[in-house]
Length: 479
Image (cartoon, rainbow, N blue to C red; front, side, top):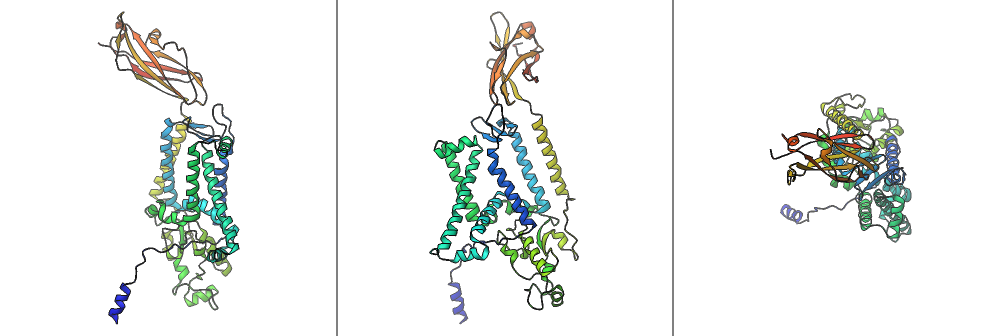
């Protein structure tokens, strides 16, 4: 009989794939939910309204933020960034990475819970779903209803339509950053925009819808790399969402609030903890985890379970904080102290110092950028030319890039050699348009006596706004 049972069990197919159970979060009110909503509205207002903010410029599109690809410049309010400023981008990426590490070491995945694009757009989509379809039980009921149900067709259809509209407007807004928004919007709907605009809108609409409407928590659980390496950045002192197991479980585990287990005294006498196993913390979680099972990959530290649990504790007249932001080190104490932000750690201090230094250097570099870039190269083929009268000539190329924000005039002279030795052709002044570069052909002609020893000298460049810079150079001869 046992042999038959073993054979029967071995012949059963092994399920390597389980069908996804959709996470349908319940709405909860509380300080963390209100903070998440405030961040959502501010972020959406900045993203969707910034392309429409006018900005006066002498040369360029009258828009606050423009990524001017044809002009090879990025206009951020009064700051104009050129490809030559790629070092700023490297600094900015370094600052963003260190800031992420700094925040994670202090407060865990707070960035994921409140500021991540995936979190923000998913929050917006869930809010639309809640507004149209109702609270969690109503949405679950609609999901189980057949498609022949007119209510399901109407509510789910309108929900999907609004999701697609938001995804489309998100993609279109991104494209509006690359030109003058009113003109680009008209061109887009008139069919006059470039093909890249339509391809970008199509790709971003699909990816936005998939991320916020279809995949949702799967992005955090399986796609986002940050969730994978976050554990290496946590310390026992990191402040993040925790369940106070000692208080919640007691000595005999959690129990529902039935007769005889409704007060703290009754539960303590029976050995039960404060957790009444209402599972509201699970129902409000956007990734569907149970925080009572400990630290998990899916926890994005959004604090919604804290709001839910504190609400239940208030109704039961229990002390708040069964689920709270706390550190693992503090929870291990026999009598945990009030949670606090512990920054006095070598790693955190190192991140903070790096942030201050790099941000300071970035601000200094931006504020002390010259209004033009310059370089001088000698033409080495040939290195020198001997003229018919015995004089020796060297040729140079002076490159000027105007970064001033307006058209400029420049004068070029020499220091350390006779002024008459410089020949710029027919140019007394060099005119350079804003954001453009020019190469000026210059030649230096000296007598053999003046050229003896290969004298060093300087090209001096004067801008119309009073700036003066110099490039060192050397004169070469056969001797």
